[in-house]
Image 1 (cartoon, rainbow, N blue to C red):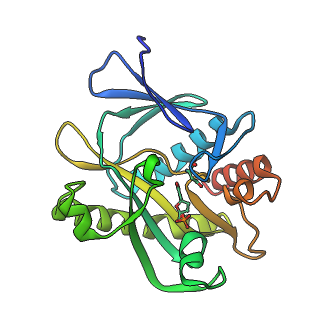
Image 2: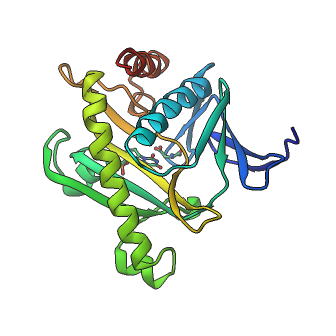
Length: 236
Ligand code: TMP
Ligand code: ASP
């Protein structure tokens, strides 16, 4: 297989494959936070995120969500449809935490009356700022129709994943997804869904099982990611 590296991000590498419409996404062992100001890694992190993401893509497939995942090849590599990534991070929040808790000056943990969808412009140099829907349309990052589609899909993904994770004893506090446009001009879920881009709290103890363990120096990052994988596989 030809393996031309076409992009390297903070947690993944993207390679071309011999199929023009397919890419290979490789999950790295590195871990970054605060726009890569904080860096870490653990051996096997790429593999765990690849396996967790694979599990989630399969659950979403079974529930009719279109996504870029085609197959997982090795422990830390998956073949995905080539898409043009829409430069927005789409965040869904069920419980107040993270940057929103900070913004409104409240404690984390309050359940929101309904899930909130927010958009952030993907630009490291600008620190991925929060952007409004009129701003997204004005600057042509997405059309109004694409925005509506992304909101609908993000909420559907939330509706599918929340009960699924509850079965694993984990509460989805919030998560981030990205979308791309494929060769059929369809908007599909892209990137990954893993503890790097979610907040997961134990249903009973409220203990954190996601990247906040790294961001906030809580320790046992590897054990938390491993536990998410084992809990998810345990419910299949
Ligand atoms: P926030 O509360 O920091 O805005 O994060 C909301 C959700 O988005 C949380 O689950 C973590 C995820 N996220 C990313 O995946 N990438 C990022 O760069 C940031 C800031 C958050
Ligand atoms: N994803 C961002 C980074 O890698 C920020 C974060 O997740 O906290 O720096």
